[in-house]
Amino acid sequence: MRYKGSCHCGRIAFEVDGEINGAMACNCSMCSRKGSLLWFVPREKLHLLTPEEAASTYVFNKHVIRHRFCPTCGIHPYGEGVDPKGNHMAAINVRCLEGVDLAAIPVTNFDGRSS
Ligand SMILES: [Zn+2]
Image 1 (cartoon, rainbow, N blue to C red):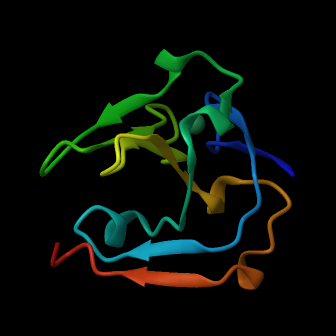
Image 2: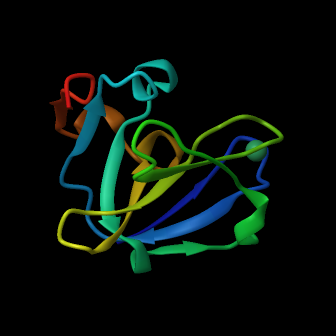
């Protein structure tokens, strides 16, 4: 399945290949504020349709994840990082995907606040 995603204004647009088997809700200081539901995919499954530099980058804490967001409309469509095994991953905010039934996606709560 190929999903289309974007920020609100369209400055950031992308496609993602994969099956959404679930999403993660994290309670860390960042995720609790933005309310994103994250779907993790290998970074090569995320295909940007807009220039890489269209998205601004925010990092905090251990600087493990590069939170990418739109400097125009403020939406955070995805993040990028490297998992413990060294794989380059993308964390897609499924709320930014088109045609996704959010209520049908099993959500796992992650205690990012404590980790
Ligand atoms: Zn935007």
